[in-house]
Image (cartoon, rainbow, N blue to C red):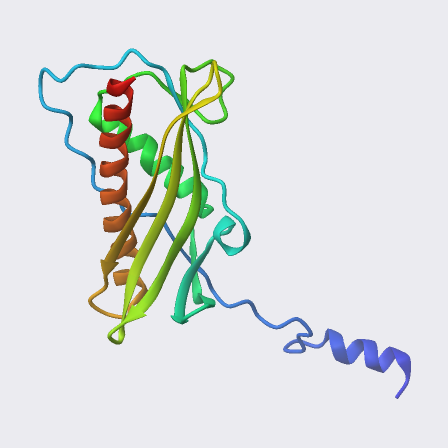
Length: 199
């Protein structure tokens, strides 16, 4: 076949050398606002910088992860988070501190404004895993509270949340991640406020 005929054949309608991409649905991390701290609760004058959690490998991306078999992570097809997982967690924690109101001086991780304390963290788990035939959302965050002036470690803790999912639908899994993140954020805010009181 002449070369021109080959080129024309590839140019004909319906001839597509590149496979069509699978449509992808983006999901935000669902969130319920925390109740404000009880009226009369003391506010902390400490300025707190909330750093974006460190993460590596698949945890530093936007794929929604599932571990159907131990030690074999996979991703849900056709679904992704609207932002990277560390950014989703950072934004959820920032909202939680603002909802609570006991630490009004919050500094964004990307800001050059000085802060008295910094909350550093490592995202260790953000996936669903199967228990008794159904998925369970799992979040794990290792947190360190640092005095920025002395660079001294004031406290550290691992926060872990599990939320069973009632079905295998991606919507149900997303809702479960939101509930687990809400509880983790609530625990972390209380812990941070108490650590600042102990200083």
